[in-house]
Image (tube, rainbow, N blue to C red; front, side):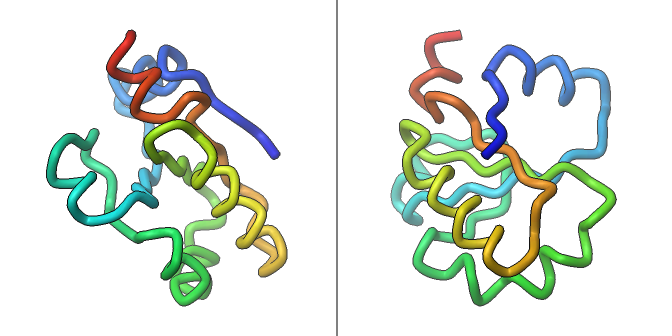
Length: 98
């Protein structure tokens, strides 16, 4: 599975690149702090697979608190044939430390 660092993601976002951000944390975590991604908790990610397949031409970046749930989301969607995904290495912890 592919990963992206917080620094590399910030650079891509700052340049205006069209990236899909998906927050796979729980709603209360998303409310506390997020970077603008759409909230789809990990438990619901597979039910959104068809819609995410339609984003084939864009990178989909998953993020969570530490990177574990975002990696799981990648694996779950890879089974559904979705390969254009990246996991934010270190999650929101690394984003805050940046």
